[in-house]
Length: 87
Image (cartoon, rainbow, N blue to C red; front, side, top):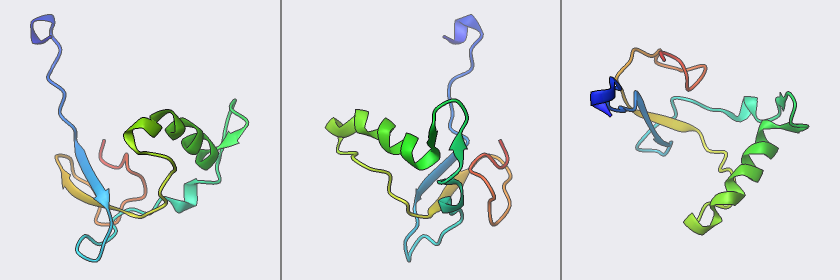
């Protein structure tokens, strides 16, 4: 693909679920009730429906757990407002 001028994919941010060892840097509960235009669902309903497609991989529901930013290759504030901060 690089011969076609495409750069290799590199994630810019890596998250894990927040724990005592990895304190929360982003909590997304506030966005779950936001309606998705054109879908007739809110974010939580859409995410749960979408993840049901991955049940064979052991994913059955949206886990509403705060996230911890493990590594970032872009500058982000200490407390993020969005997972897209810095991108």
